[in-house]
Image (cartoon, rainbow, N blue to C red; front, side):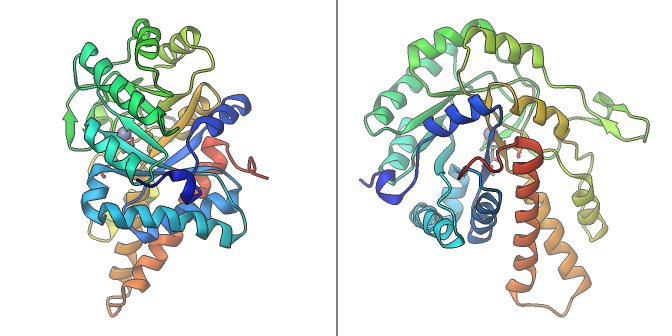
Length: 331
Ligand code: G3H
Ligand code: 13P
Ligand code: ZN
């Protein structure tokens, strides 16, 4: 058993408290490899912002759980070397069993999500409470989820979303003891969040998706004032990245995300954590495709992973500064 505290990581409690008071949100970026980790940490340091390094069970399988743990430990040292010891949370994304959460806590994670949203309400409560009771012994924070997002949620896929029912949140919090709550208000996972026929066109002819259900968010805020809310599925699917991917041989169709102004608005509310994975995938893929298409003689991975890492860092900085608003909150 290794405690995250020995690794220099922090849990999410204090940074969420500050985010709530300062009306901003903390970015949770998924990582699976070294370049993504470097881009996340360097962006957070440059922006003087806390950050959440997020690991899915798919990432654990891909990269090896031990390596990921040491990479997160390295991330703390890397931030210091870059000049600022920004708070870094190592968080399990979409944990689906008690055993997975326990294993992550034993390996040094400072925060876990137990996603019981696909179970019945009572089973979700029982599973979440079991994880909370275990995690809190080690001062590890726990994110629960109420409501179901459409799209693929870490190997669990749902065709339609079920909005969070505000009337359930107080009972859920009281009976589980979770530290934060992921809700469903119209976001979804992946790069195809809406069908074009669900969207309208603006004056420039661009597709505008239906707005998020801020009425549900406000109702939830009223019932649990000051409690940290989490938004999953919050990629905006930048159309310039989609265009580069498709120009250089990609085949992304109807890729539509959540407009950034909607996320900006959410970040000023009780939403303290915003999850972004797909936008990073798009930025990386666009950069790799462009290099390989324009410089076909290159075969050194550094020549395409380097630009991919640079592009990711710029994307993350943009999110932190312009969308989440957490820049310059670390002195
Ligand atoms: O919500 C899911 C995240 O984007 C992680 O995706 O399971 O493919 O690693 P993944
Ligand atoms: P996106 O697919 O919109 O990036 O969402 C990521 C996420 O919610 C990870 O848990
Ligand atoms: Zn998610």
